[in-house]
Image 1: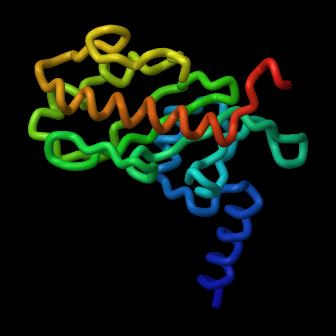
Image 2: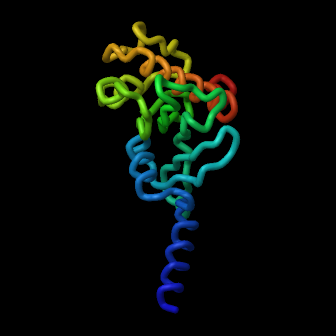
Length: 172
């Protein structure tokens, strides 16, 4: 009975903090994308996304951005050997906060998309940028099919999310 009460208390605390549907690994990844966030929503909406908030529920929270999985958006981009699962963060102005390459089956991913410098080049990149490998995105290796596919998935997903959820600055 005590264990059940404890589990219920944890669930209620999670609901109050807006953390339902966010496990420890996902929370760590979301924290990497939004270090200033104090809470995250469960996945919701179309396209499926998480919301990142700063502040407290009592003192007022403000939306600071969105995160989405590239594998949950159509059209599904495929790398050399299947989909590349990337968690992508976008702030409310349409600027990427970063990416986390979470899962893939690419034979050369370990020296291309898994490299920290691949992910680093997306930080502070506007959704309006071209996202062209060899132009504003460095291929970082000769695994260009993998890099091109991953880059296209981030670009297309971020733009789709922005079209649906982000109000242009001139319309505010």
